[in-house]
Image (cartoon, rainbow, N blue to C red; front, top):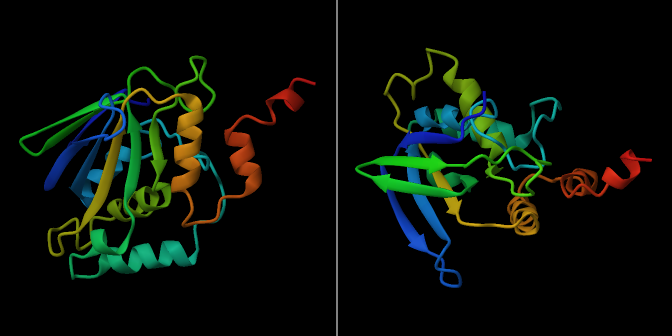
Length: 192
């Protein structure tokens, strides 16, 4: 079941109102990696173009993420670009971040608005896989690791969401086919 809201404990965070549109804001937080499983594909909607991809989960990016995740330097959040989420709204109070996705479904919903994970799916997946093992040092508290989380809140149109997600997903090559599929450019052909 995909949640319409999720609660995350944060170590540090703040909210900035958008300089162009006061109805939009961005929360930037440092989240303990133990909280990241709450952002897994089965927990919240994903706006990311790679939702449900079944490719083999081995790459230089995955290896780099794992290496810095298991390092005992606590610098994971400084070595990676973090996770970006689109939401209707969020509140940050006393170290608790509540992210509200509204009733927006995943890509292709009827009302045209998409909310959820926009970038950082590989990071979420690496951390979620590592959390499944009880022997992980960061699970046992030996090495405290954090990840940067950016929550973009406001009334974004489907076109704006597409542009944001496309601009965020530059670290790991996203195929043109996946971007076209995300923008539903193949829908016309599927109806034929």
